[in-house]
Length: 57
Image (cartoon, rainbow, N blue to C red; front, side, top):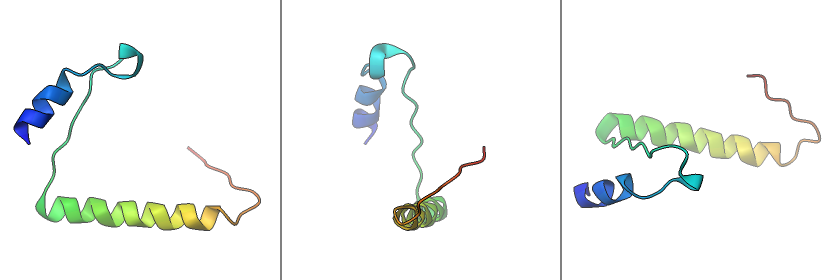
């Protein structure tokens, strides 16, 4: 894993504008992130059926 991250760190980014950043997580934090991602995917599935969708940022 370390070798992959080191190699990826020197790979060019899109149009070489920004350096890559990596965050390696495990354990409880990984489970929290998986749950958040699953909620996001469920939201995307629901959005497909909407005729209007607004994002407030």
